[in-house]
Image (cartoon, rainbow over all chains, first blue to last red; front, top):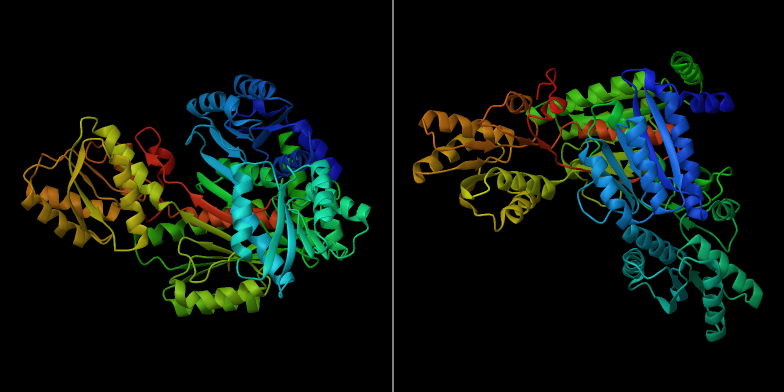
Length: 312
Length: 312
């Protein structure tokens, strides 16, 4: 049934032009160049297939771009040749996409922007994004619940950005007064290799570390490799973040080194596509800002966050 | 092709009534005791009807309450006798609903809270609310665009609350430096009669008033009656807010006294129900906070905000 539905949906992409009240929604996203983007592509495709099956009056055109120039071309093409009623866009970069998306909005097309904002405020009708302070807070609250008597932790940060600052500030506020002490913190740049090196350095400097806030699942992979290479057994657990399937699987399996994870879901693209479809098919207002919450993944609920078919 | 797809989709979903995985969504809202609540009831009913038609696997139970005690009973009944998977609740009052809704959330039922928050943070999975600073800002920006050379206005405020303060602050920030001067401002308490009295007083005190920011459609009704009773013709226009159908109709008809309106839509209940349904039928994450934007209604777009069958 799944396969039939999927191919029917793909076939239907071509027929929209003949029905008068069919609305076309364009979805423009970066190509699957890394883990999170891979997951995002998977969930975008899944949302399009689901919605084509649910709403015969909606057609979708999904384009992936490996650079901003290609993404601008994709969007102009959707307007020129597919007469889209709405555009869902996750900008490759803010600056080069701002002007082109503004033109689309000014032509009367509904615009939903996801995750990465444009450089000018107020262009989009709907903005769907993650909750960075909340991501840090949920991570910190978990640490506190897991270490009721406090302890010494090390922390890895992402690429120096507002996003990273908000996450760290949320985390620090949540652990304040708990007896948990961050004895060292460095940028692992959301990168496995960088994080391996940072963690190797931490392990050399500190004889006792109770736990690690890796703050990202890719960084957690590097951290785990460094711990294993060093043969250290003082570290009780590592907390990553995002919802990478390998990490969710370890949580689901009760792995004591990865007892939990915190979502920053690439599936937010699906939420943006679903909400745009609600706007096209109902009278419910969907202008505004949807801040998708970061949720704690534990062995109890991990199954509902595990997508074995996704690359991420 | 379309027809085939449609029936394939319906067939795929249509087994739901007999399948064990039918999910029930409870919707608990205050009864239609005043205009905005009347509109909210209308849009809740419409959303439930639409979604029952779209998703045969979803069932809904909608209950309206004229006091908080009845609302608590409704919700307990939905859990006890209907085995709801999700609850969408617009609390009659925050305090008496907080404990009962918290119990529902702790039992594992998804909770969506609309408009009026609970007294304890973090109970709900999803919070859907209006944008009060944005409501003020959009109203102020319209005033500026309508009065490019500035002018003297009077303003009416709602019941003294955080909501009212945020709206007024947003308005004042938007008109700053524009040459628009608020020569008088009083509380009309979101009430027609109070606003009639306030406006009557303004008209006696001020010989020349260029425009009125009534900030609410009910208050605008009182303001218009006072202007008419006084026979004054110096006032060029009145700007209300919310999206009452009589006001939207006047905008649509090009009435120069009501040239625009600003939404604070009672249909936000429909958005909350739709998003909850997305959560029950897809893998898209819908935890978080959706702040529904306030949109400017002008003669160009008024038709899409006009619901002749709604009581509001």
